Length: 409
Ligand SMILES: Cc1cc2nc3c(=O)[nH]c(=O)nc-3n(C[C@H](O)[C@H](O)[C@H](O)COP(=O)(O)OP(=O)(O)OC[C@H]3O[C@@H](n4cnc5c(N)ncnc54)[C@H](O)[C@@H]3O)c2cc1C
Image (tube, rainbow, N blue to C red; front, top):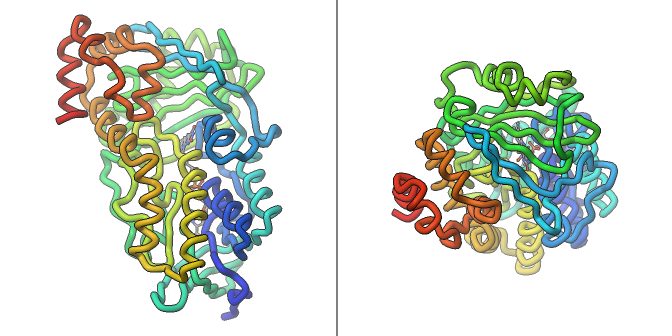
């Protein structure tokens, strides 16, 4: 057993996905000595993602540039198709975001962290985490068959949905099946696009129960085509839903008749909202490890990165005050999170429950009654700003009841 320069490390970040690398980057920028431990030999693969990223997180919130080489498509808006194939089309004046290549994107986020001074040990899997409240956190790891022990005053668990750090420090909670989406996706070439700058989303009770199908452009008739379905809602293997859409649905047959699948992806998305607690003595969780994933869209990249900045602000104060207690870290970090996302994630979770019950007819009606601005408000949890009563009452009074019961009772 050997030590690995632990005395020179202030903070260890476990995992170098977008959440871990970005947390390390902000911490290193603040002058902390940061070490990343990554189980794999290469970040960003296998890709388990639709690869859509919001622009405002980068430019407005984190004030970091999106690396140009990671961008496969610039997105200006979205179309949401109802079961009867009517659509809401929406274009944001300032642009909606990007579809990236996660192989490049994750690498670029890591490069930025290393450029700021963070170190990384690859092929280093954390097996066990132990907290000594008064002193430090000890990580038992394995690197190419060799056992190595690391210690640091503070550890960040950025090790994804199945976080071992969260499990060992008692923060992980079992995920109820209803709070998990099973996802299947393809990268395809030769896809028909009326416009290669719009996200296309399809919904429908039989088409994709408790979920949506996405067609995200990736430049030059390439696309990520995928779906997520709530566990327990599928009546056949999830992959069959995607294949049925692509090969048997009239829309799919039209759009994909000349398309070829060049990559297959599978994954699980936690859509049950954040953990009750995502910090304890000397340990904080970020990204999927803390389940910082939008319950309505399943998007998690931007939230984990933003939480990385919240952690950095928290730890600047914690080191100044030499206070690494659970109560201090929770108050600060979870306080930042709740202030920014507490209400919208809470509403998102309730809104997701509408999707558990909504019928095709109701979905057709809602898509006819609402516009793109309304959908953006819904995704951001600002339901009260949508004049639901006025917009839906004439169209379908059952919808008003379904939505107000779910959101406001
Ligand atoms: C099919 C699918 C589609 C999605 N589409 C989108 C989308 O379009 N847009 C979006 O915003 N989000 C999307 N998401 C969610 C998004 O992929 C995740 O929220 C995001 O990757 C979380 O980042 P992270 O850094 O927290 O974790 P991860 O990206 O999972 O990274 C965790 C890292 O930790 C490492 N690690 C794990 N265990 C250990 C260990 N014990 N020791 C050391 N290292 C370890 C892993 O190797 C990995 O590098 C999608 C998810 C899925 C499954």
